[in-house]
Image (cartoon, rainbow, N blue to C red):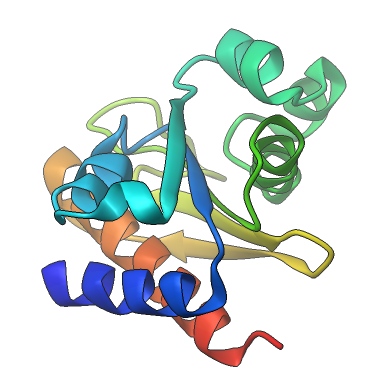
Length: 160
């Protein structure tokens, strides 16, 4: 993943732009991966670990009604998380993840491995992506982090 992060850093530095993340199921893994690279303080602003619904509401402004109506693991929630990052942090890019890493917590409509990833650009589009990853808790978390970074890198490379 180090090459992905180096590529993200190169894109952000070339633009003079900043990134912040909001993580639920990954519990800070994405922020850790980003800050494993020396010099990340030149483009990575901050990370929010909003594991509980209360934290999503308090730190990111996710409306309680969104969580009650759609659930914490939903398109609406991840879009609200990414949007909340842009409200709270002086950044141009926001990456948000929410999901069910397991081994418990899944249901028939949202089984373990269900993940939503949101990527938002200030004054640009906010997109959500749905995934169903296989494997144990660690595998789901790693796949989520890897995929989120891939989505961000693709968005950076195609942003105007």
